[in-house]
Length: 62
Ligand SMILES: [Zn+2]
Image (cartoon, rainbow, N blue to C red; front, side):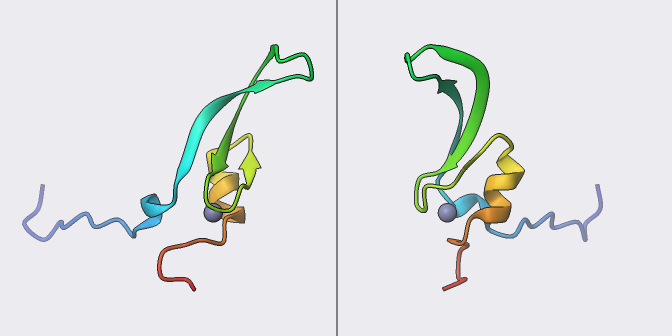
């Protein structure tokens, strides 16, 4: 731990990315897969990183 270590993280966590959600098939049965979704733009992906990559509602990015 250094006195200079401010450990700031850019505000990517402001996006309402939720998950992991259980993926359901057409019979509403869990498929065993999970996915993440940005509630603001509706983008869904298996990996949260992919949602973050696709999501356009970045803070201050208007
Ligand atoms: Zn988004």
